[in-house]
Image (tube, rainbow, N blue to C red; front, side, top):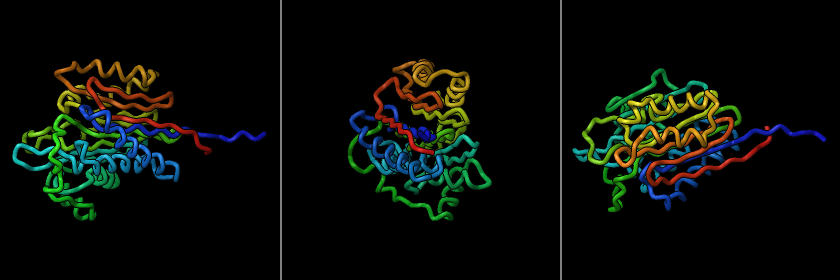
Length: 270
């Protein structure tokens, strides 16, 4: 009997720490989009970004059309993406575009790694990225101000990727940038796995959280042990934090507050 070689495909998505677990239908749909992409041969980084795009289009989450407003009434979004080959791109304080994670993906294919503010918007406009009007953002009248960064991590055999997007902190100072567009802070991906975080951006940044979590993967720690270990770096209730992790040995997610998140795993022939 011929043995068929198989590989594992894993997709984890989260709607941000503080998001309602009842909204896991949204993270599940995002995960399905990522999974479908991988099954049809989509590059691992595209699959992660496309999953996050679904979350950006769901106004129950703090990204894209659900983004928080700054103290001056503006909406400034951050996003990033990275894969295990070392490809990375991000945008910071981007205004006027519906899916910042797709702009970050294009940045990752350019000569740049991080673009910010008006320059990022000009870049996105030149790439004909989808725009959004200010009055289309967070206009449901429902208060989702406690929600945070959305994200995705994926595995396609021995390839990994992560993607993040956020509308930032509600009523934050205009121009404030958190952990999301900073490599190794909000996310990290390498040959051994991928990490995506959510929570208080300044605290996540100062701990270089995603890269340090990735180092735990390199040291052989199982994701189910990594998640509580890293959560313990952040003391609730003062610091909200959540994380999703995938490696060659498994996957896990969790937070020190409520968080909508989902995970799926399948094996497919190589």
